[in-house]
Length: 453
Image (cartoon, rainbow, N blue to C red; front, side, top):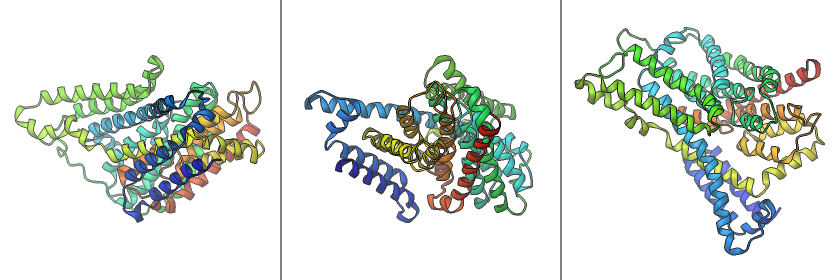
């Protein structure tokens, strides 16, 4: 490992430490992430030829070096942008549904006086939705619903933490529930039937055990906001029928995104933008038919105004983190780390994937899984075959492992931004609980592979 590579790693670790201690430094994590991104790539440019030659087999001269690096950065930026546009589209759709009363009827359906009953309803609804949609979109939807149901902040933080755990667990057993499972599925390393049949139970275990522990942190009765008759029908608002239409177009559209991808083979963010366009047009038509005297007040809930409510700091945080991690990938750190793990643990797949899962809570799981896919060839039979132990464990560990730190998954980052949960609070209160569920899931998978399949 060269001195320059070590400097890049140090820059990343220092940036990560500043993000982890955001509550102490009082500096927004997005600013740190952007500085970390720029610092890593600036250091890379001190001697890019060593990486271009080793990683990409570049054989050109110095004059073409800048163009080669620019092309690499643009490629990573393109991959990152698909995530960012997906995130912006999903956040805007959920904001439209929320602001126009789309979640009001869901609140009525889920109404209960028991905090623990609500916890289990939230857990299973999040788990199921994240398998159908994805953990990122599901987290946004569930937080918006929670805001309608729970007014006490301390309780809502516990529910929000469970949303992160349940969303990541639900996404791990579905071929379309998480970016990493989509990658493994598209590459042909796992099959839809195989991953669902063998990872469903471990994923459920990794959600149920943390929920069981967290329920003991909730005491007393739940005091939900009163839903007064006609209170939601304020001037400029939609009718009940229109609100339900907004809900089903928004949430139903999000469920349609995987179908759209499978039909057109276009990236998921294109489907999200399609849903946003349809929902935007629908709400504009609804407002167009409102009484003219109500237009001024109704304008505040139109999409053109709601776009300003999208949390851009979360978007920029994603940009900084993903681009910084892409630099680590470019200098070969992630690949070397995975290779070292395999050598150190003598090919024990449970330990290797288990460690990768823990690492996925620290750095983004996408490049980790991508590194593993590039490192290990698919075998015709055995643990490295299609639907073999290694690939299924990788799908589980990379997905569920991200719950251990709040910045370890897309779901965690979004919830962190929406509910203003600090890194320290989550690490102190939730990390060990998520870790217990994570280990229990691995044990259950071992039992299933040993005694069932």
